[in-house]
Image (cartoon, rainbow, N blue to C red; front, side):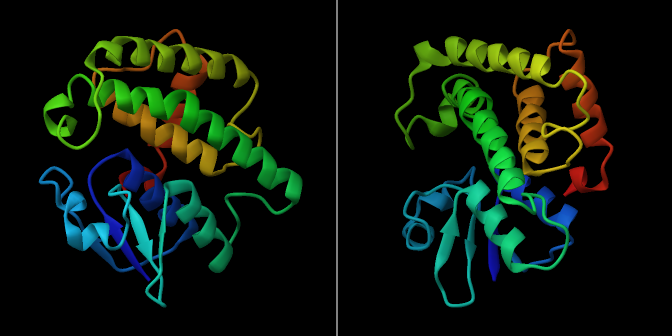
Length: 203
């Protein structure tokens, strides 16, 4: 297998997941800032033009970060970060999807439509007037998740999962892109600090 890597929170989720699972794969780096992911060679691999993707041994390609992580979780030995029972897997997927749709998506689009506008305006439809509302939406949902995290160590209670990695990588990105964690969200702050201390955070 070959992992197509780049800058940004999306590839970082997969790198951190692999580090936690002890998975080592050959990588090739795509120049996201230079637009290499929108050129024919990469689009032939992933027609969505997004990063990252994973090329399998038979030449087929898997894209979308949660899909890549779940695939690797299934085909490699080691303790699962998705779950060992249908109920655990459903819980992980539920929280990962909530984080992705309610926090990661508005946060990243808020960045793309403002600070990142110069980079993204010729690559996708950008709505600059929506940037502030998207950022506020992400903060609202982080606040909601802060309440849901009361009494929990991890997003899924006592289980460390893909949901924790997903949340950490995007909140870390937000903190670097003008969307810092509100210090009043003490459960999120504590979770983020705990995740940042994990060796895999350097992946």
